[in-house]
Length: 375
Image (cartoon, rainbow, N blue to C red; front, side, top):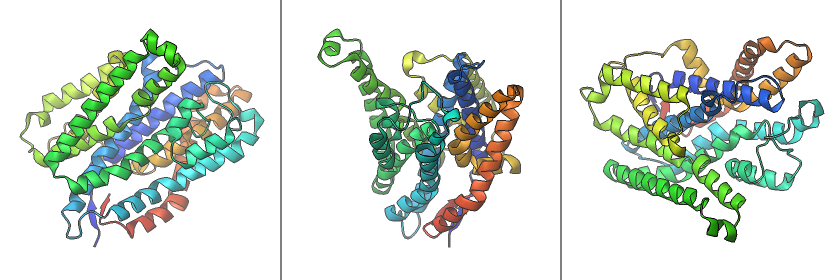
């Protein structure tokens, strides 16, 4: 019988992350259309990316926690079932967005946007191949972000993580998993530092090209987020090892973490390019405390937010379509003042429809391959 596991507050945290992404992309699209916007404010510019990093940390924490529980069952971890579960959850919306973004919506000329977005029909074959291979994060760097599909860059990273991570959890005990995570993150950050330094080395620039080195640097620093996923996984290990009496569950420590995250987020401080990991660690502490409802200083586990968290994948995948349609129509009638209410309402409606009539079908199928599920 499938065992039901509930991680308190995490669906609400997903909802918060998803709607911060909506706000960031709304301002970015307004900027791309030449409309008044606040995208140049550091907080707004990094808000979307940091919210996606929160998704990564959440995914690393949740997937690893579930794998640990499954590992303790008589049948152990089934790699095949794990992969099938991930495909049933991720693939349907991914390919729906690809279909809309590649073949249908580009036919409407009045919806087109210029830089930083590229025309999907330029390098069309290469774009299709990279997306089908779940490499949208690579495509967005070497060719350029495709309107309506640009958000899918994070899906490619998660898919690659899901290919190797269950093997690690199945093979190693928790101590070795911690060593693996620490060695990987240390090596990754060292490699990123070397690549960053290489972009400033004139001899290397002359031998290769500044554009090539910068693209490599962007791919490693901004499009390979295994470190954020693994930081989430590390906190999943911590969650199984420590008791509520530890200082990190103290209410004053929790308040300090929330205040520190708020200050860093609103200041937009970038730690010389290595701010993703700093925020990811803070997210880990926040998640660790939120799932411990008996010691958490806040509770955000309410039914309405829980539901919005459940449809957050749809919010994340559909929101750019809704944003562009809403802004285009509202601009025509000089009604941009109501852009956000319209965008939020229709993003929720479309995502709810998708969850009820598309995703639920595949989620039902997913249960056939589940030993552990979240509620």
